[in-house]
Image (cartoon, rainbow, N blue to C red; front, top):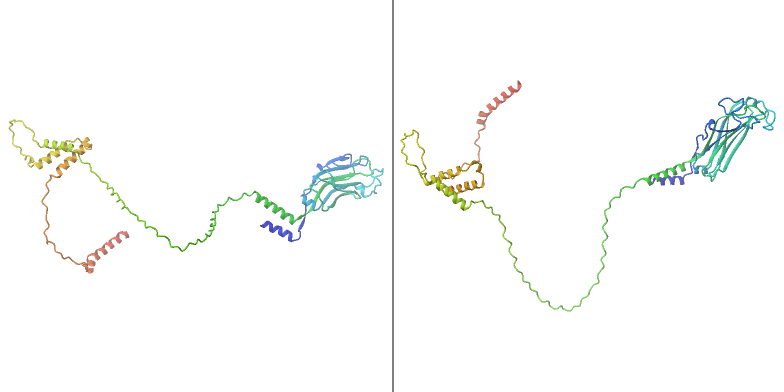
Length: 402
């Protein structure tokens, strides 16, 4: 959205531009290509870039460069700025102009500055050349400006050339000396172009920005299917024939099955096991035969233990002896547990119960006390507990104060 606002601003407002000058596109003099008579003979100090005399044909320094402008900036037109510092021999201030640079008499020295522009086919599309006669002694800066109007050029390159000659003098190297050369370009930097470049950059960023992951959208319900109206059917008013009455016989539903009741059966000892245990108890109840041995014994001072007399007591004692005969290591085995259960079943129904006590009817009164009044006496409670509580509190305070 923002880029379209920029474009609308451009088309509705007059084009705004500012002049921008590039940096120097030529190198220092030591990197120029020298040809002809340069730095030779007397009159040229070391490190200077001198030119020769008329007999040697003078000297030339050349350098090439690229024009740092876009095709759009070149086609809108631009300005070529060239400059150089020239050191002239002091004699030039007093000499006359030359009729010919190769004449026999000394005359004013001459230098020239040439800028040529080439297209992609290395064809010269623009050339600016100036020749200057030096009528002074010392150093002076020469600068020139050339304008190229609107054109259809594309990418351009250039060449910067400096030539000097000691006119009318035929020995040494007293011609012009060059230093600080330079070529720059001034062009119109339109705000429109800047905006368009920003728009192009924004489009590039948008093009390379990965799209967000697709959002799942719930499917919209399909529209209801239109109902086609059915044609109205007409019926004659003839009476309908009576339909026979159908009779249905309903069979009674089968009763639900009775619920299954889980019956828990307790493990009862088998009859054989019970008979075996009863036989063992009966054997224990029989007295052991004793041999008739006459032994005179003194009566024991201790009272002899009373022997069981009733049958119930004899069965109980015999059952206890049967259980005691079970070894401790076999006490929890299946056979031992079965023996214990048989003994318990035998003795359970044969233990005599005591006489039941019967409550006397009418011994307790039917009336009771009502709970509608309190039997507490506040004064008596204070007398009994208030003083004790106060003494206890003083005792606790005494302990804590320490």
